[in-house]
Image (cartoon, rainbow, N blue to C red):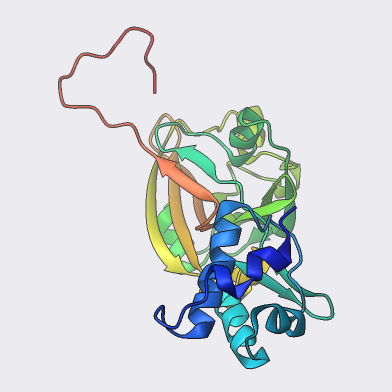
Length: 261
């Protein structure tokens, strides 16, 4: 455990020539966080104690803490103080395989579960009519849920399907693709569009982020073997928790034995 008195001793880092004092303190704290000297979830001393240890004013200390909180490096909890933000485990997601969230997490040895936000049959929105090729008088099955991995919120997923392909949305317990496979309607290919966004206040709250935080919006349209659309899903992923990876090959390049996509 880092000796906080030694770590914050201003003789080790504070200088007249290195910019505003609050900026120097922010850098010092951030260096401790990045190096692991200040571990994830560890509490920081109260502002008055940091002020005493650094010979800085409480206003200067507060400004440095607030700057780190705005960057997500520090979490301020009412009545409890300031803590180093928990480290988010990044998930690497391949763009070459059509798999479900449940399958992805199981392959990584992570326990996945969902919190249902909406599940039922509804009249389609104009967007769903176009995406699923429906008539305006048709119904859609909607499945909206917060996807969790090892109790960490990862994504908000909103799926829409024609009701003749998923007559009872309640049959989806864990994996949508597992339920579709039982019905003989599992998709075989999909088109995905990925874009960077700033999260809405509602999605940010669900994902334990601040409104406007960076996120990824993914629209997936999945198809049956005959070409019919079976699924239209819009998902919001935490930008700090996902890396999407695609394998690219030169045209006409030989494929090594045993390689697969």
